[in-house]
Image 1 (cartoon, helix red, strand yellow):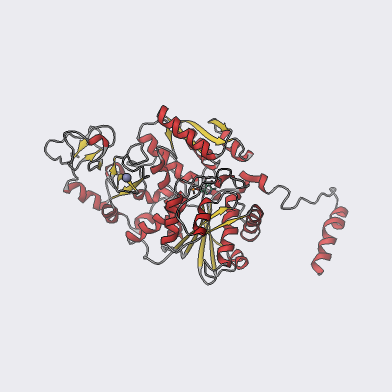
Image 2: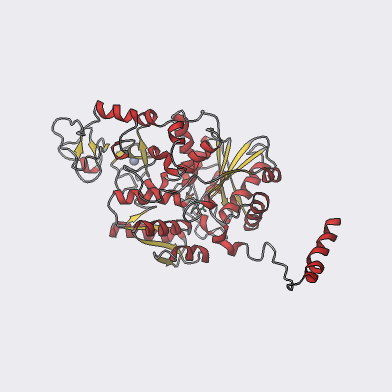
Length: 484
Ligand SMILES: Cc1ncc(COP(=O)(O)O)c(C=O)c1O
Ligand SMILES: [Zn+2]
């Protein structure tokens, strides 16, 4: 179908029904400055506004995804300037982070509970609210992990109702990072990248490596050299290039920014960050749907850069705005390890100024980001929703991992221990009411961070292979212990 064109405008050769980009955006300076534009984001091809015919088709929801302009622009979080949907992540004017923006009116016309429920059980059932133009091509099976009602753990932590969003079993690499990577790599392909990369504390590296392998993209993952074996092997196995940096995550990240600028690779959490970050919203969408289309009263979320927390907040607001859930009050709370808690400490100091941690010192390596890119916005999400933050010692992290395993049957990595132990503190301090309901976001699998618990959860009882040894060394002592 031919889009209508304003006079004097060229048509996008790719006919991709691109996004409106009002000036001043850098590539629009010149003779057309000041004119409202529609741009495909692929280098200088313009198209006009949507015609009535296309809108009618959209209403029926029966045209292919690439023709739907639901994902409209990148937008600066600070000044609101709009940018084309390219591999850019900061505003030229104030260095504010760019974020995906959508045409919610158009989405509202097609996205209903019934339509979502009719789709496959993956994160892509919310595809209108994710920032790609066409159909996903990477990670089509990711998401829709279980939401588990954890009554025994609720009792232990002293709260009326508790749910676990269990991303330890996310596909394919057992962490929530598969959500962000499936969006980032699907978009990377749309933008024409053949080399993808990331700066990672471990889980992101695993996910980029696996998803790039299945998509046939060359990948480089850059990590701090001191990561857990499970995280390192969990990348190497996919044949990616693993680059271990002698330094902390912030140094890894700085190097990646330099490489991205110089070589034009698609770094999922640098130049593709606006796309990557939006993938986290799917965790919030799923929580609402799995709770029977409602927003939970409290959500407890582990924080590294703070991005996941801000995106779960955004997902709840989007669902409420679209009328998919009732606009009920909710709070988002963040948790960190005390050895690297720049966001939690800022909240406790009552400020939104995040003091960087230059030398993180904790067993929770996945959350060890000393200069959190979204710390400021995470603080505002917590403040706006009446949420709070907590941080926990390494001993409490191990306790948290054990509580989750022994009372809910879920084996989480260290970040999960942070969330459970942090939630216990938030409940004890009254920031989460004892009569309330809460969801804990458990974001990564425990087999990846075995070092944290080796020697801290007992050892097998060794016996000879005969019934006498079993009775003497197992049955009789257990019977005696049960008698007390
Ligand atoms: C298991 C796990 N949970 C939570 C996070 C926090 O992510 P964010 O940087 O979005 O705050 C990470 C980040 O690496 C992670 O690996
Ligand atoms: Zn700006």
